[in-house]
Image 1 (cartoon, rainbow, N blue to C red):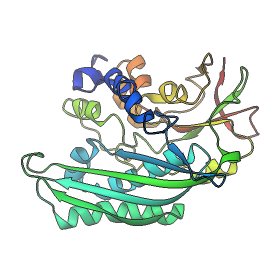
Image 2: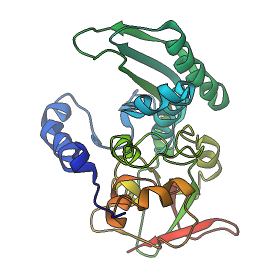
Image 3: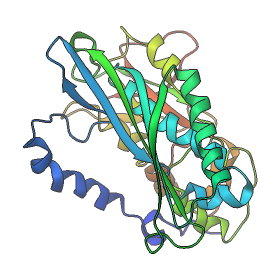
Image 4: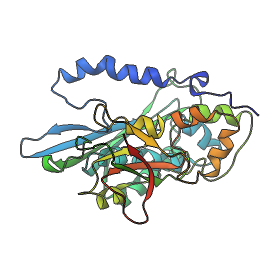
Length: 298
């Protein structure tokens, strides 16, 4: 087999995603927003604290998870994804709101999604305070559904972690993912059409990194949640201009699902699309014993 498959050929352009951010920047910042394009948006409350918020969806993962009876995992993905994004800036996550849309709402499927999200929220200490369920025939095809959420947290202005103090020589430490998590499934589906894979790391829900983030407060100069764009793409979002991350791609063991993908997708594309076994990164001055050093800042 050859590594000929790519995200672009599967129908998803990471370049377009980046261009959308820049195209919308002027309109967004005209409302008084700052830091557009970060993992979480920040809004000052005027009392020395800021609200931190993030919205995302789980993309096409349900198209793989639903026939395999794993929609509950997708609910966990959604909550963990948004909560992880919020804690990248040093915030404590507070609440989550969800949105389910489908051609036809199946009560048991919606319940599975919400049960999965609620489980993650309980672990993170986040209240799932509400949401919206919409039936949209004509927008979605029969059997299709989408699941999105918004997480809101709070952080003291003095405690914001934004990468501004990162310097050359700082160390990048990595924390293992549970597998693919929730990004890159349009490409995963292309590969599944050629070769099946049923390992648990294919549909394992996104790992929650709240405890790791809290433990690193006071040491971490930047956090990156490794989602679409891979390790380098997400680290670049939190490093100061002129700084770049240099990754040792042999520093950790990849989960088996990425060995399967590697039979169909070239290494450069794997690095650009998937987390490859590292779901969360922290930039610190120096690593502590036992931490996985995956690179450094140049």
